Amino acid sequence: MPTKTRRRRKVNNPLRKRRMTSPTNQGHLIDELESRQNDVLNRLAELNARVEGLLNECLAARDARLQEMDKSKPTVAPPMSSSGQTADPTVTE
Image 1: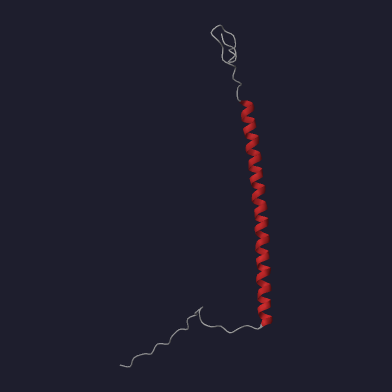
Image 2: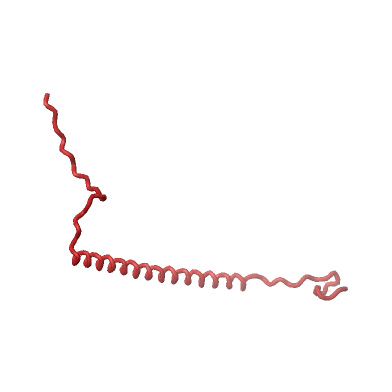
């Protein structure tokens, strides 16, 4: 019985030497990468501004809620002495 020969599949090896591209093509690739990088940086700056805006809104809402809670708390009267008068901690009896 004859044996079948297997064909080897070409494997894309990143370590394999590649042909150098022309200097004009390299410049174009660098320009494209720089453009993409600038776009990503701009988008990150926009996202950062949105996050900071949301944080400021949340903090303002929290502060307003805390102020409302403070206003609605009953005020505590100073403690009374045994004689029924308000006790002043600075005065000794």
